[in-house]
Image (tube, rainbow, N blue to C red; front, side, top):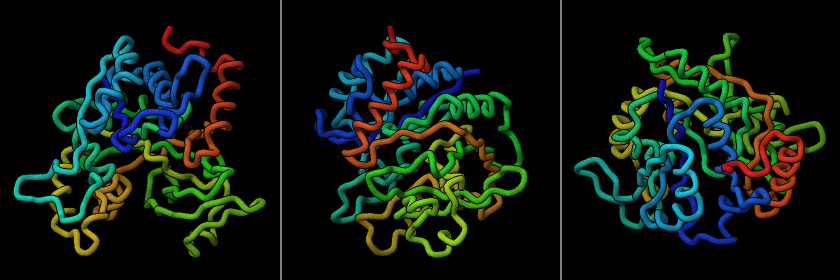
Length: 304
């Protein structure tokens, strides 16, 4: 069965170089975080990569990563642009940014006709999550009376930064391991053995082992159809601050759960997430990749 890895990379800066955190070199041969994600996905059985980018960065993006990867795996590009709106809608005055992760995935609707996993370009998820989500997809959960999804659940302690607070989707699951709700929570940090955050209610029960979402979702084309239908509804109810509102995947999943229209399996992974939230995170991330290469988790040269 064909399965696709969708990488949301439209948020990468328009000037490539040392200042773009998503493109910081992580390994001796110049590999960036995306290289390791694609390597893990290919190993798990994914057969195609779709990059969601902006047209303005296409040339540089292909030079930095796209052309290299097209030699080892089929690659396609789709484009997330501010002006990509349903017929009859206009960009609000003052709006400069695209419409968020929901719109990013919507850009894939004409090229992704098979089961897929969605990831962020600048997050490293580890091997286990790709294997578990791929197994979920090929088990064939589509065709149920609900939209069938899965998400990788990471232990909060494995996703924190030592250089400042983070924002995470705090997951509440039932006894069968299915998602009940995701609470988008800001200002999360470890203080000793305790977790502090900006949500006083969440802070009462959150622990270092609480499951969090890192925007790694698995789904089928019916999820894309729902995202497509929901975009017009989102635009119809923008209300105030129209220049800032975003159509976000966690909110779309939350809406489906509220309607009892989706089943979302939480697939727990013990792997440690690596990401570049702060500039100071780059060196510790490089050190972790160095260790994994030394321990032969990855070869010295990924694509040799």
